[in-house]
Every structure is written in C-alpha cells, then in structure tokens.
Image (cartoon, rainbow, N blue to C red; front, side):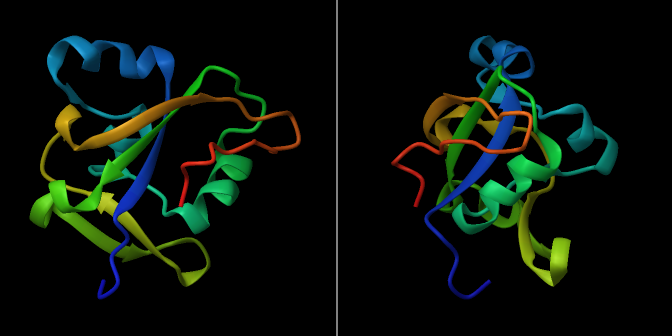
Amino acid sequence: MSDTPELIYKITTSASFAPARLAGHYDGMPIDAADGYMHFSTAAQLAETLRLHFHGQSDLVLLAVRTADLGEGLVWELSRGGQPFPHLYGGPLPLTAIAWEEPISVDAEGQCALPEAVR
C-alpha cells in the first residue's frame, strides 16, 4: 500500500494477550490461527470492526502496532467492502512493535469510545 499508516490496530481479549507479556510476542486470537494470518484494522476501519465482531465484549485490549516494525510479513488484502486490510503473515507479533495498548469495551449495540491516541 503506497500510503501505509504509521499505526495499525489489533483487537484482542485480556485473556488472549496475557501470555504474550511473558513470551515477548503475541500469537493472536483463535481466528488468526484459523485464517493463517493476524488480522488488523486501520484507524478508519476500527469502529466498524469493533461493531461487527466484538459487540457486547468488555474485556478487550486495543494494541497500536507500528507498521514499520512488521517488515514484509505485513500484507494489505482486500476484505470487507473491498477495502485493503492489514494482515500479518509468517509468525507472531513481537511486543517491541506495539507502540501502546489500552483497555476498551464495546456495548451491546457495538459502540465503543476509542482512545484519543487512535489516529
């Protein structure tokens, strides 16, 4: 993608992310393992991803990930609505690529107050 954003976002649960703190890398959610790559969203895609896939969940962690730290494993592929979505192939997400993390929750209607740092 020619205008790659500085940050992309990974939504995970606290339980899924907890082992990463000791391992130094994050292996992803069950859907990532099933699909063979790690799913991310851009800032513009984030609200819709949360609404569609995480409504009613309160124990979530939003990871802001530096695209420059992901190398050639970061691939942009057309997905929902023909939009290019960032996917990470070829291994786990190194914790060193995470710029920041923030707990979030999504209400039953799929609404979420995103951190101000999402850009």
